[in-house]
Structure formats: C-alpha cells, structure tokens
Image 1 (tube, rainbow, N blue to C red):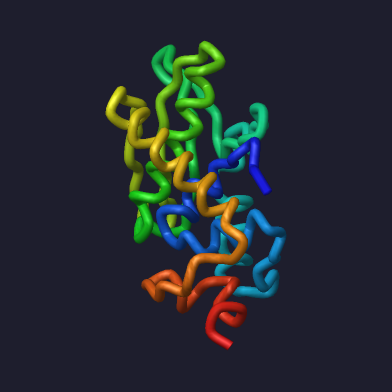
Image 2: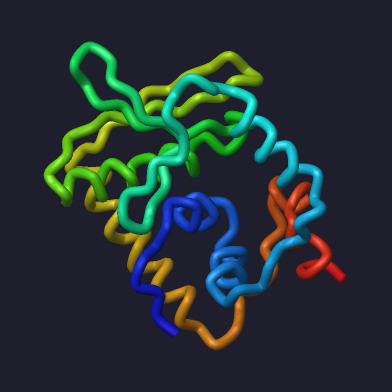
Length: 166
C-alpha cells in the first residue's frame, strides 16, 4: 500500500506516534466516542467563528484562512500547546503545499484555551526536514504490520488506546 496524498493530520500524528500513522492509513478507526476527539471538534467549531474555516486545498484542509497587513495567513487551532512541535510541522507542511502551488503564506498556530499564538514560517531547513518526514511516513505506511507500541504522554488520551493496550 502506498499513500499518494499525505494530509497534514498524518504529519501531526507522525510526530506523536508512528504506530497511529500506520493505523490511520490502514483505515483502522479510533474510538469515535473518545472525549478528546469530541473536545477537539468543539474547540474547532466554537472559536474563530468569523474566520473562513476549513479551506480545502488539494488534499489538505486549513482550519483558518485570513489576510493581515497584506499577508496571507493560514492557521491551525489546537486545544493545547502540549504538542506544539507536531502542530508546527503540520503547518509547515501546509505552507510547503501552498508554496509548491505558487502561493506564499505564513502560518499561525492558535491555542484558544491558553490564549496563545505561535507564528510559523517555511524555511529552506524546514523543507529539507519535511522531505525526510514524508519519506519516513511512506516507509511506515508500506510496512506489513504497525510499528510496535511505544508508550508516550499522548497514549492516555488516545482514541487508539484500547487497540494498543488491550
């Protein structure tokens, strides 16, 4: 199995749990009644109601799109900055997709519950690292079995918890 169009969420999960990347791409659905999945949906719908939401561009979806001082800004809204590094790479991926289409944009991570925002810009170094991440994702998805369970702080709230630890 080879995935042709990686979405930003897959980039995010890659930096949190490589096993989850494999599970998602093999259409193993997480527990949809997981309270953290519900909370994420609520935060996404409740905050930033005036901004244009869920902008589809090819195989990716941006949470927020707006213009500020003649600059195009795309944004991601997250419930916590706990995994801000993964969120940053998700946004870098979106910026790269736009750049490849000839659109220059900047990124903004928003953590409304914490009243925190982080600017994200695409750099040459980030593009090289992103290339490595995408290759590793491709390698993971093409394995016949998921990577072994590697417990981390995300596991206790994960929708796949029962799948991995039962």
